[in-house]
Length: 169
Image (cartoon, rainbow, N blue to C red; front, side):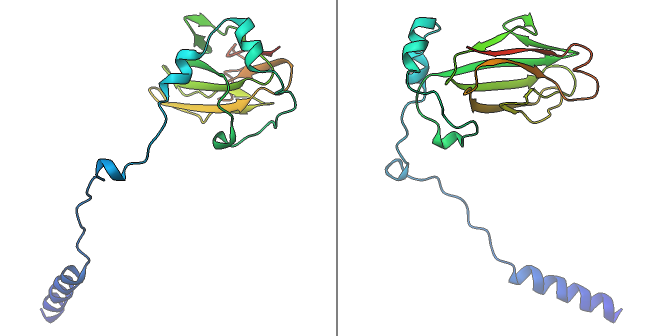
């Protein structure tokens, strides 16, 4: 009985001495940092190859792995890729060629619509493995010209056709 009373007293003392959490207050509008509008570059981006070539002059020789905060504000090529059973889907097409220009800053936004998958190009990077409904992304600079294979590393997905060509012109 004494032990029970002692434990109860100890529990009350611990709770009484615990710090009280203060409610988090949102910063006032004056305290918020100013951030440039992220939509503006996307509106200026064109899929026209001539425009893309002009935007990348002088970018040859950039570092292969770059911290996204170090990447320039030049054109960003975004691919929305979905993983399904033994295929990648981009714009409704199964395992299409993904084509970029050398020097392009590339972002692959990957979502698994069915199963557990990832997206990998050995020479440039990879996403995390995600389950159905999960999403992740990878960013890199396509600084090497050539044709590279993109694929899924999970199980035998690559061998069963979950792969395609990533082409840097």
